Structures are given as structure tokens and as C-alpha cells.
Image (cartoon, rainbow, N blue to C red):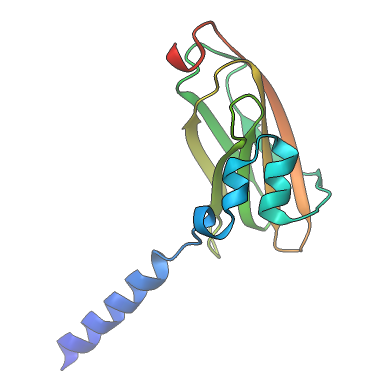
Length: 145
């Protein structure tokens, strides 16, 4: 009996830890939007983000447009963080949910076919939206580089 109760607790804990919003299914227009403002509106509605304490990092010059390392971190109590870029046909790159009690600190590699900018939007738990942008150059070759 004791063993089955522990198993049930373990399964319940696993179910909670792997749940996430499927933004592609719930907000499909965000993934086909051609501009950053259109993608942000499709994801969050009509919002006016303010500048916030968001650390968005990427190389100033990316030698390989097919794998640009990007990181975003903030101390703002956040529900989600979304990453956008302004040069590829679709602007939305990624959306991260920030689980309760965790640090908002994410890293990924993105593709950009040419030089442009990356935008990070933080959805705060306070109901406000925060934004920061970063420009970068992509060396010749873009996504093929």
C-alpha cells in the first residue's frame, strides 16, 4: 500500500512539472505574423510594453546566421518571455513560460538570414509588459553561413 501511494504522488508531481501552454495551437497567428508588432499583438493583444530591466544578449556580429546564441534574463517577476526577430518571414521565435519559483533565464540559438534586431517581451505577473531590443549583424552567408 505504501509503495502505491508513493507511485501515485510521483506520477502527480510529474504531470504538474511537464504541463505547458501550446502557444502554436492557442495563438497560431503569432507564428505566421510577418512583423514583430503583428506577432506581439497576435500573442498578447493590443499592449504597450515599457522598457524594463531585461538583459538580452547576442553577439554584435554573428559569424553564422544559422545558429546565433541568444540569452534573456530578468529579475522582473514574469509569467512568460517571448523572443522575436525582424528579418525572417515569420517574426516569432520562442515563448517561454516562467514556472512559479524559478528564475527567468533562458538561452537558445536562433536563425537570422541577415542583419536585424531581436526583441524580448516579458509578460509580468503584475499585468504589465516589458520590452527590450538588441541589434546585431549577421556575417555574409546568413542562415547558410
